[in-house]
Amino acid sequence: MHKEHHLTPEELRAVQLIELELLLEADRICRKHSIKYSITEGAMLSAVRHQGFIPWEDEADMGFLRPEYERFRDSLDNELNHDCYYFQDHRNTPGYRHGYGKLRRRGTEYVLLGQEHMPYDQGVYINIYPYDSVPARLLPRLLFTLKCFFYREALWSYNGRFENNLLKRLLYKLLSCYPEKKLHRKYNNFAAGRGWQKTGWVRILTCPKPKNNIGYKSEWLEQTAPVRFEGHEFSGVKDFDEYLTFEYGRYMRIPPDGQRKIRPVSRIKLPEPYFRFQILYKEK
Image (cartoon, rainbow, N blue to C red; front, side, top):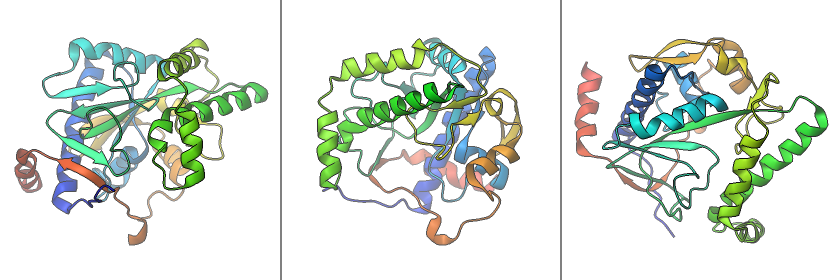
C-alpha cells in the first residue's frame, strides 16, 4: 500500500505556480507559431470565476483542435526549453497510457495516488488535449463512441490491474494483455486515419467527458479571445458563458466545502524556490 498524502496549502500553491509556468511556456510557443488553443475545463472556469486558480484546484488544461495539436507537438523539438520542461505522450514515452499529452516540469515529482505503477517520470504537469471531430451521422457516431471507450479502457488497463474492485481488476488484466505497440498503432490510425472533418462537434478521444452528450462545439476552440489568468493573458473560449454552462451548469456558484476536492498524492517533490516564490507572488 502506498501512503496517501494530502497537499498542504503551501504545497498546493507551489503546484499551481509551477503549472502557471508550464502554461506560460506553452503559450509562448503557440504565440510564436500562431497555433490556436484555448485553456479549457477547470482552467477556463478558474479564469472566469476567480481570475486565477480555483483555491482548491490542482490541475490546468489546454485544448487544441487536432490539426493545431499536431502543429504544437511538432514545434516542441525546436522550441521547448528542454532544460526545464519535457513533453510526454504515447508516441514518445514508453509505457505512457493516455491518449493525450502532458507537459511537465523537470526537477519535480508529482505522483497521484494510484498511479505509482506508471513506468515513466511524473513531474508536475498540465494536460495538453487534442480534440477530434465527432462523426455527423448517428450510426458512425455510435461506432466511434464504442471505439473511444475501448481505447480509453485498453490504454488505462496497465494501471487498472491494481484496482481494488476484483471484477474490474480481472477485466483490466485481460485488457492489459493486448500488446502495447499494437494498441498504440491502432489508436494512432483511429485518431489520424479519419482525417479532420468539420462536423461541428469534437471530443477528446480517451476521456469520458462530456457525459450524455456527443461532444463539444468545435466553435468553442475555433473562436477564442484573451482571458486574464493569474495576472497573465492566455487564449480562452470566446463564448465562455455558453461553454461553462454546458460543462458545469451554474458555474459561478461556489461549491460547498464537501465538493472542494484536491486529489491525494503518494509522492511529491517541489523545489524550494517555488515556496519562496509563493510568498513573493502573494505580496506583489
